[in-house]
Amino acid sequence: MNGPDPAEKYPMEGFPRVGFLKAFVDQQNIEIGEYTYYDDPNGPETFAERCVLYHYPFIGDKLIIGRFCAIAEGTQFIMNGANHAMSGFSTYPFNIFGKGWEKGFDVSTWAEAVKGDTIVGNDVWIGYQAVIMPGVRIGNGAIIASKAVVSRDVPPYAIVAGNPARVVKMRFDDDLIARLEAVAWWDWPVDKITRNLDAIRGADIERLENAE
Image (cartoon, rainbow, N blue to C red; front, side, top):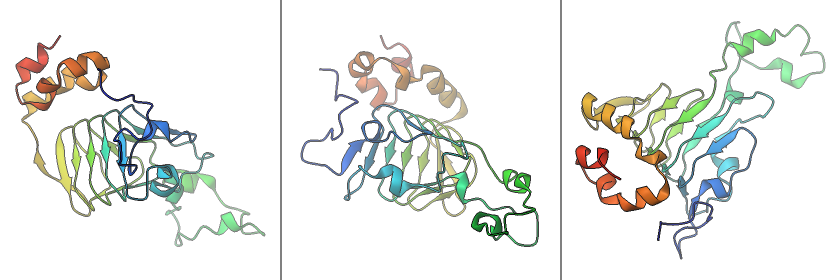
C-alpha cells in the first residue's frame, strides 16, 4: 500500500473532524497541496469560509498552501480584503458604501496596502488559533505556535510564537536546513515517500539523501 488516497475527504476512519483539504476546497484563488489536512471538531467542510477571511476574488490575491501541512482548529488566514487605505487621516472605507462617498476615492491609496499572495510551504505545522496575516510567506518545515500572529515571513524550519510572532528557535542548523530543502522529500512520488518513511521521520540526513 502507498498510504491514503490524497483525494479522500476523511482519511482517518471514525474521525470526521480531520480532512484532506484539497478534497474540500474549490474556491477561486485558493490552492492546497495533497495530504494537507485540517483538524476541527466542527469538521473540515467549511475551512474556506471559516478560516480564510476577507478573501474577495476581485482583489486577485491567492492563498497557496503546500503538501503535507498540518493545520489545527481555529487557524485563520487574513487576506488582503481586510486592508484599508492608510495614507490619509482616516482609515474608514467611505467609498465602499457608495451614495456619493465613492467620488474622489483614489484606488491607489488602497492598493498600496495590498501585500500580495499568502504562501505556506510544505510540511508546515500551524497550531491552534494561529493567525496568518496577508502576504506572509512561511517556509518549508516551519512550526507556528498556538495563537501566534504571523505578520512577517517565516524562514524554513523556524519555530515562531507570540504576537507578533518571532523566531524562538531554529529546528536545525543552516547546513542541515539547506540539505533538507535540496532533498525536498514532499515532492517525491508517493511510492518513494512510502518506502522511505523511516528516513523522513528520522534524523539521519545521509539516509534521506540516499533514499531510492
